[in-house]
Length: 501
Image (cartoon, rainbow, N blue to C red; front, side):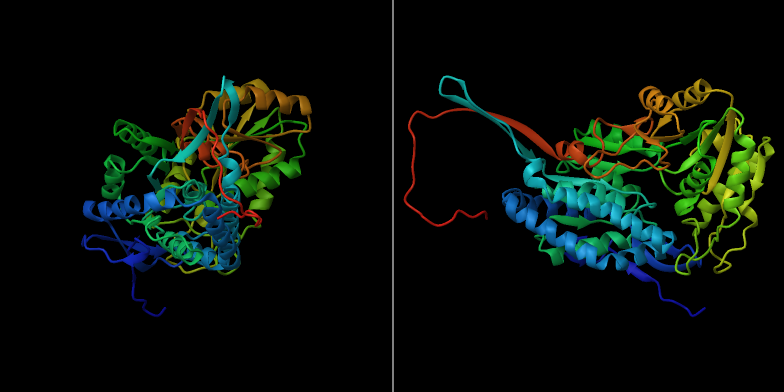
C-alpha cells in the first residue's frame, strides 16, 4: 500500500478553519486498513475559550434574526445536505468503519431532525390570553439560551450532533461542537455546509479535543447548556460537573438493550431482526440489541435460525459492499474480543465465533466478526457490561414475567423490543417495562425526529431527551408577559401585501 501523509485536522471557529497551537495531537485511523490517515488537534483551554468567544460574539445577532430568516438558512442546509450526503457518508466510513449504506442511513436519520427544525416558527409559538383581567392580556414566549455545547461520541459522528444542533441553531442559540477525536472530520464538513447555507460566522463552531476540551466546556461560564452522548460513567461525570457549574445538561449514557421473543412470535421475523439489530454498525450503537431473551422453549429454534443467518454475513471494508465493517480502533476490538473469551470461560456456548472471521479487507484492519453466544446468564460480564461490539447474547427464561423482571432490574433503560403476535401481551409489555424507548416487532425503536430520544435509569442523566418538543424546550427558556395598554396606536397607510422578513 502506498504511503499516505496524515492529514492535519484542526478546528472551525468564527466561520473558518483554524489551526491549532496546543502542540497536542492524536492519530486518526482508517479502521478497515489500520493506517493512520490524520492527526487531530487536541485543543488547549485557550483554544476552547476562543471557540466559546466566537459563539458568544455571534449570539446577539443570531438571536435577533427573524424566524423567517433562520428558517431559510435551515432549509438551505437541508437541501445541501440532501444533495451531498454521499460525501459525508464516505467520510464517516473512512474514519469510523461502518459500511457505506449504514453511514448513509445515519446521515438520513440526522437529516430528519434538520427537517423537524425547519418548522421552528411553529415550534416556538407561544400562548395568548386576551382580557385575562380587565384590559390585561397575558402571553408566553420562548427565547434562546445563548452559546451551547455539544459533546458527541464516535459511533455516530453525524447523526448524534444532528440530534442537537439543528434545534439549537433554529431556536436562536450559537453552538460549540466537540466531536470524538476518533472520527473528527464529519463535524468540519458539516460546519462548512452551514457556511454555504448562509449561517453567520460564529454561530456554529467546532473544537477538536479530549478531556481538556470537555472539562473546559463544562466549567466555562459563557456556555449555557451541555448536550452529551457517551458511556454511562462519563455521562454521569458530565451531568454532575455541568450542573454544579449551573448549566442545563442532557447526558445520554450507555445501554443494555433486550429483545424479548415470546413463543407465539414469528421466529423468522425475530431472527432477521436479531441479526440486523445485533450486528449492524458492528454493534457500535447505543440502541443495538445485545441481549436476546428467549421465552418458553423457543431458544433452540431461534438460536439455530439466527446462526444460519449470521453465517451468511460478510465482514469487510465498508467501501467494498460488505455487510459489517471493522470496529473503530484496535484497542476497542481487543476489548470486545476479551468479553467473548470471558463469556466462554464462564460457561456460555459460542455458537458463532467472530474471532475466526476471514474479512474482506486489509489484514491490519480492526476485525471481529458477528458473534453469537447462547446460554448466557445474568452474572456473566458479557451480559452485565455494555460491550459495544458485534456480540449477541441469548438468555433463556420460562415466562413473560421472568423476561420483564430481567429488563426492569437491569440498571440501564435505553431501548427494548418485544416480538409477539399477541396484542394483549404487547400492550402489557409497553405499559410495564421500565425503559424509555420500546419497539413492538421493531428491534431498533429510534423515534422519529418529532418525538424525543432518550432512555431511563442509568441511560439518561438530566430531565430532557434529545430532539422533538423536549429538545426545543431544552434549548429555550420561557417568559410570560402580562400587559395593559390604555391608548391604542396606529400606523400609516400601506396597501401592499404584507411580507415576512
